Image 1 (cartoon, helix red, strand yellow):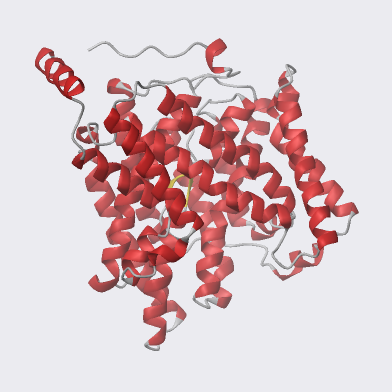
Image 2 (cartoon, rainbow, N blue to C red):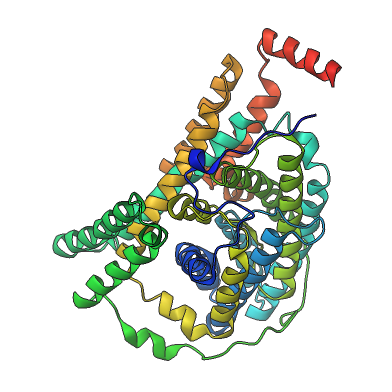
Length: 462
């Protein structure tokens, strides 16, 4: 079977391809922008879980470990150590899909009088067991190509981008309690960031283009500071160093709480497949054939291995992030060799929490402006996948149901209230809902007769 040809740089708009090695300056600038785009998403699930479960003094350590494991996992995923990893520039971090089931398990344990340490022991035991499910799925993921089709992955990626836009606009306004005056100021700062990123990204100058995200955030931060929106007092309450302590809280397990987390591991396999497909599209790499399938298999296996490492080092499961796909598209740097720089930065932020907390000083409207561009780019990548395939009637309905249900859950989450709590926690993520609906529709809807006949002929030829 002949391999699909990669798109030339002129067609992708890339400055550096997957295997190119940018010089130190370009690599460092590109890596910093990936970190800026992802660091909040890396630490936010941990922060949400910690506050919901009242973990108090344990939260700083958990956040530090999330950054360290994210750095290690990103290096493994991008450099592909043996069969582990996609070999693409893929950042790792905790998916928000895990937040619901983890909080549900922790709250159930908390109400029975368990301490914070015992709650964390249960959570990390469940997550360590769950990673074995994803590792197992990775071994036959390539045989699921008739199920995980471009219609499925394109729909999921589109929903990923569109559903994240809500986060961007929530950050743009600053908070729900913002007054009209402060709300206008927040919007002005946020859209200043948008304007700077977009303007620099469409210029032909190499350095201005790759510095688009960083320059936008930097200018937005400076303006916010001048307006009194930055509170440096928040730095003083953080510890200066953090040391990894494997199995600090021990491990525990309970089947009752394992099932929802196991289901999320299965679902995030779909997310990873979609994110890696989007990464391949943006990077000008194949999205079909042996190379593509090998990357999907290695990427899912990498997620499983990295999630196991996360549990051992006291943080939550790792999955392939979608945020950095937008950074690749904006900067034009798809080189996987940036992962080493990204890993060093993230691990350093984890070892020295005060540095990570400094990034948390960036006002929400500034982050909202930056992520608006990045998340919109992810949705565009999904649309590109959908547009690259001829649509049969079946695929039309697969896409319609997937996107419709995914965005429906995002806009009207109350629709899940009649479901059992554990099931509702799983499907509260629009990405999860979109992926499950797409796969079920692909399995149950009858195919177009001409398409089925053509597929059968192709199978006999192969």
